[in-house]
Structures are given as C-alpha cells and as structure tokens.
Image 1 (spheres, helix red, strand yellow):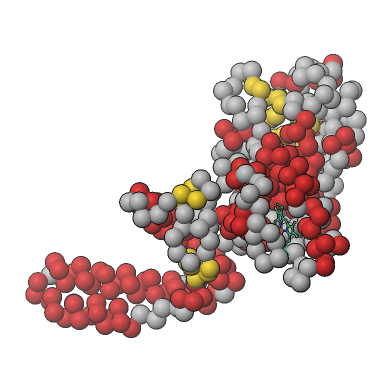
Image 2 (image 1 turned 180 degrees about the vertical axis):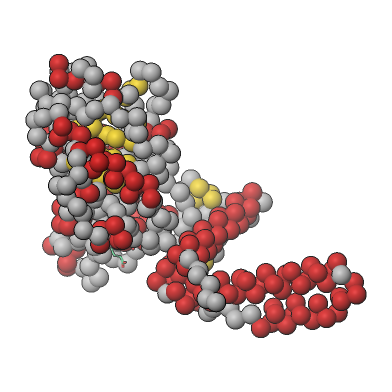
Length: 404
Ligand code: HEC
C-alpha cells in the first residue's frame, strides 16, 4: 500500500524547522554574549547558514532530508531504549550506531548558503504605509538612477555597469531574506555602493518595503495579477467603537479596505465577515452622503492620511486621484487577495457589493487554473465564493519560495 505523503506540507515543516532552530541558536549565542548587535539586531556570526530554498525546487532533496531525519529519530529511539532496557542494551546500542552510521544525509552543500551578519534580521516596519512612502522618497534620492522607477535596472547608469542591476520587480525580494537585502543596501554588493553612511537603518528597512510594494505594482500593471503575495499595508486607524489602533491589530481577521467613493456613489453594505476601514483622504467626510444611510454603519474605522492612499496606489498601480471607490480585501493572515477597481464600480449601490473570481488578484495556482464562472453568480454569491477560496487556500510560507 502506497502511503500518500503531502510533500508540500513536509517541505513547509522542514523549512520552518530549519529557520526556527537557527533563530533559536542565534538568540542563545546573543544571550551568552558570543555575538553582538549589528544594525540594531543580533549578528549571525557564521559565513553560512542552512537554507531550505533547494527543498522547494528539488523534491528529491526533501525526501532525502526527511528520510535522514526519520532515520536519526529511529537511532535516538533505540539509544533511549538501550538506556532503559538493560537486557538488550548491547544489541540496541549497536543498532543505534548502525542506523546512525548508515543514515544517507543529503549533500550539506545543497542545504547551505552564504550568510550575512544580518541574514536573520526581522523588519521592524510591518510594511506600513508610512514606511512605504518614506522608502519611496529615499529610493528616488539614492537608488532610482541605477535601478529605475520600475526596479528593472534598465537605466543608462545601470546598463553601463560591468554587472547590470538585477530586476527588483521579479521574485528577488520574495526569495532573498529581508536581512540579506538590508546587508546589500548597507554594505554594498558587487557594483552597488554601500549606503550605511548616508541612509539610516530605519530608512533602509523602509526602502525594502517600498521596493516590494513597487514590485507588486509593476507586476499588476504588466500581468493584471499579483504573482507574489502582497501584504496589506499597515496603517493607523481612527475607530470610534473599537480599540484597534492599526490594521496590524486586526491580524487574524478579514479586512476590507474601502477608498471613499466620489460624492453620490454608495458605500458597500454592512458585512460582518469583514473588519471594514474607510480611507477618506480628503474625498469626503466620514459621515457621508444620504445614499449611505444604513451603509455607513459598515465602516468601523477610518483613516484620512494621504500617505495611506498613496501606499495603496503603489501596490495597485492605480493613480492616487483615481482610487476613489476602490476596495481591497485581505485574508486573515494579512495578504491582500482581491481588488475591486474603481472603474468596475458603477454608480449604483449593487456594484459596490458585487464581487467575482476575477477580482481575486492573488490566488494559488490551482484556483487560477480553473475557469472563473463569471457573470452567473449574484453579487452575494460572488463574495461568498471569494471568501471561501480565500479561506480554503491560504498563502503558504513565502520565503521558502511558495508561489501562490
Ligand atoms: C551605482 C548603481 C546602483 C545604485 C546607486 C544602487 N544600486 Fe542596487 N544594485 C546595483 C547593482 C549593480 C546590483 C547587483 C549587485 C550584484 O549582485 O553584483 C544591485 C543590487 C541590488 C539589490 C539586490 C541585492 C541582492 O541581495 O542581490 C538590491 C535589493 C538593491 N540593489 C537595492 C538598492 C537600493 C535600495 C539602492 C538605493 C539605496 C540601490 N540599490 C542603489 C546597482 C546600484
């Protein structure tokens, strides 16, 4: 009987284990004073680190590693049994040694990667609208000339270099640990100069957020989809009844972000399945038009900062002044999954609530392969299906290279 193994699940588990163990080791070493801080966080003291990247690309390595770990577990078990079970101590001990010696480990070279001192650094910015805006300003000052507005590096200066800049709007920023990107910015890489003297650590993290947001925008402009997961930009909330102060406080909830529609157009209906946020940067006051009677109740919180709107403009590639009426839906893990473009929102109440599969811009491959049954569903069913897909197919561990 063949055992049906969920290899994606095994890969995810191994990736997370490898990451967690290394992080624990780093914090232990830091706690013992073996390693110190660099750029505000504990420095990884080794030139290499274990990396699960190959596990995502090559299933055979995953099998080999899972096998080796299973063998090691057996060896440990028989060792434990040898300690407890005196009568069979010698044979059990020999068995443990034999299993240990015969365990076929995959080539360690495949599982290791060069590391920087900040490989394990964690971004403190939480992809906030503020950081994205800040990053954009720093980018145009220091990076634009080589990397270009679209991050592709096809600039006069970029192309004149011996090694041209990589395409920052490809998957690079999704594959590379944030900490390694931070290192490249602060300490240079190849033909790229170091910026540690000119740009603060905080601004360097902001740059990373901006580059990811911009890559998402370039992606949607070119393909109509987000091929890589995009987090909902964190932003401050102004909530009368609730205690939430930022979107991040809603982690674990589905979030619906509504850009205030132009005067006269209706807000969407109240919907208990979402935490709703109205972005009303100058568009219209929070308590809005007469058409909103019974609808404005849907909005728990609002945010009137122009930079929140601008962050959305960057990730959606819709100009700030054309965003009125747009809606974004984020899943419980904070990934933006669906976008309703303002052009689709006609001036009727129903249109603000009509969703279909086609609004789902960020979906796992299985879902995008199946043809969306457009047009047939009612508005309510469309949203129902969208929520079901979103919940049933969460976005997986992304640094491991899980595309969705
Ligand atoms: C003089 C041109 C130049 C400037 C200015 C420049 N870069 Fe680069 N950048 C490059 C080149 C060339 C590479 C490729 C380096 C390599 O892999 O050899 C690169 C690589 C990168 C990478 C990929 C790093 C990696 O880990 O592979 C990132 C991210 C990046 N640059 C961000 C920035 C940011 C942010 C700025 C502004 C603070 C900036 N760059 C300014 C030329 C430049």
